Image (cartoon, rainbow, N blue to C red; front, top):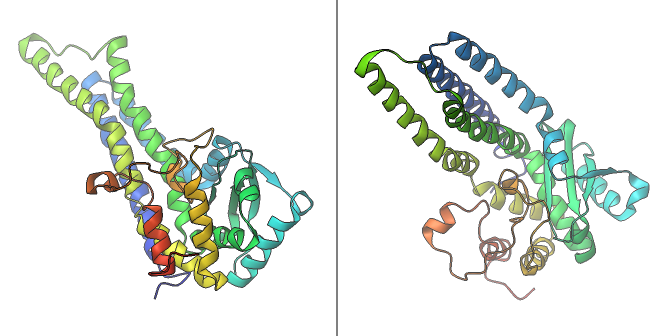
Length: 306
């Protein structure tokens, strides 16, 4: 059975692999652009940029995410109930007390971020606090602390920064060509080569949003099921989290600052629940979260009468 620390080593390996793939991708793009424009400085810049981006995403990606969601840090006196819930569950899980944040948003949601358990942060929305009772809130917090214990938070947070950079840098090719294009290599063959390279750049720029999406989805949706199961083990009360997920799914709106870049971090899709009933295979393939009903059924088995 999955425990709170089942996939720690696997998630650490995924993180380093993802950072290495990003470095190779950016260096490869830098080589391509330096060849196209005949400027070796571009390759040097790409190498330096990829290294600094990896370092920055490791140390500061949590701050970037918290700033993107406009989360504000709170102390014990700001919300005694929330503080006590997080503190008690952290002790039970054997984790340091994370920093606590609140996002002023009516949509019920929550996420965890940080590079490790010693530098973790948990954020909840005001809508979540107003909607859930204590046992349901404990279920949600236990889910987020499970992400901390499973070391999901590092790779989930890093992917926000690095996937966004992939999109931004791929777009640079098109814009730079519009501003001046590549150097001429002389004759018809040179122009033909430039045309081929430009076509490759267009294809890469067009596909980059899909690439960024697939990178985010490389963070397996199984981690949500694992966090649900680990959270239920932590509270010894799966019904609390199940009821919380049901309430969250019944909220029809979306978060004010919902972003595709950060959607996978939240306990629930910040763009709101799926309203199409049956979810097809291809639709499920590109979802950042498993269908809520499947998560509730996994927590309760065949019992759905909570």
